[in-house]
Image: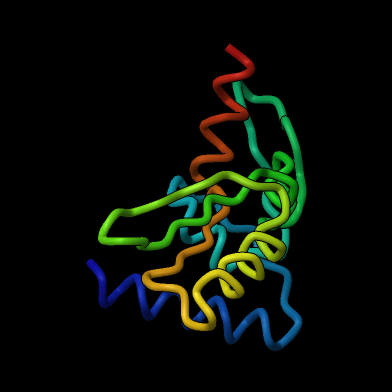
Length: 119
């Protein structure tokens, strides 16, 4: 239930702030992304990779999806350097970029890619 999950997350955060080491197993990768300093992926009983949530499976190097609204149409592009693209859009629009979003793959998407590559 959502209330119990929130309480559990708060407990983990308190223990983490106290410097405690916590070994958490979960199938909820949003939970791992929110709570963990390091995550490990296990497939068929073998550790595939251990890394930070930001770097697991090359997540930090994965292309970012930049989306915005232009002339009533949603536009998007994939880029390794979203900062440059946002600067270009900022110049093009003269400031505020309508409905701008910059997203990298989340931990679940990276996990599914990693496991898919092993099959």
